[in-house]
Length: 210
Image (tube, rainbow, N blue to C red; front, side, top):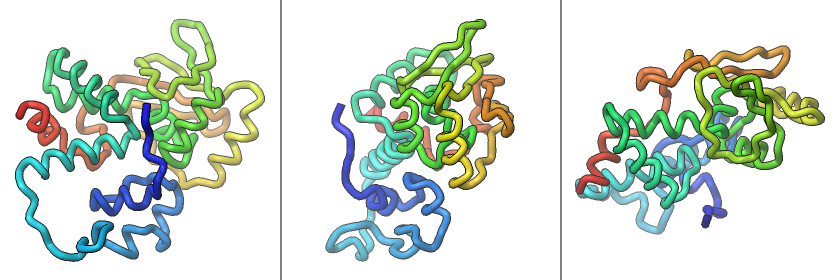
């Protein structure tokens, strides 16, 4: 799957919000969007009125970039959400929130989603489900209520350094964490009010329904 490898700060400026792709740096005065609040490009400082299509396209792109998901994979998530009972937009956000790389960030075990994705790929985390504890190296792995996320043997010192170097995360109510053992548990499927993200899911639904 093709993945963006350019300057990530340009993505924040393009969307007009902080995507927290560089962890702690995004909370300081060095943040690119803080220093340059306009979009990247030659004529970016000129105001342009977006069409209705452009607004909905930007909402979809914002969600993709916030969660670090490719175009094809995001379309697959939307198709799954549309097939579930309930509000499609909320189901979509739940699927994205339950990705292992996102849960690792929400638990404060990584400073950003790109860092979390890399740590998961390198096999630093274990997931215990139904009494079976196994190493998971797939960032898109979907966790379930009752799953326990732990640090793989041999990775604890590395993860401790990552945690100490980052900003303390505000753990959402659908997760719980033990700071001493660096473990986390999924308590429930997140409700929409529990999901803290800049995504407007209704615009995404309208984009795919056009």
